[in-house]
Image (tube, rainbow, N blue to C red; front, top):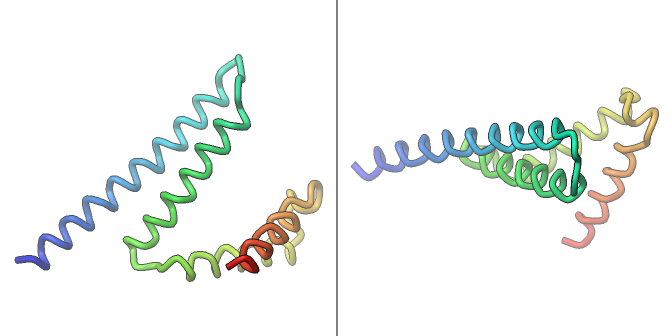
Length: 108
């Protein structure tokens, strides 16, 4: 019976995480639609970082460990650099993200 409860609990947590992720996206859209954009950077940083954490937790519940998520993120960044992603071409954001992530990896 314990195994059944674990599966049910895991499914409930997955559904909650999916809802939280969608709520975060909706909150960000609502804020960006506000004609009086106050504290946009702080709110965006808070909301986006929360969605990233939720994504990691959701991945974990789906059987993807954190280090695998990190490897896939690094791979996506490298592919964006190789394929000359539009954001990279105009702003250099992927290069900057790669540098920041490599600095974080060295601290570990």
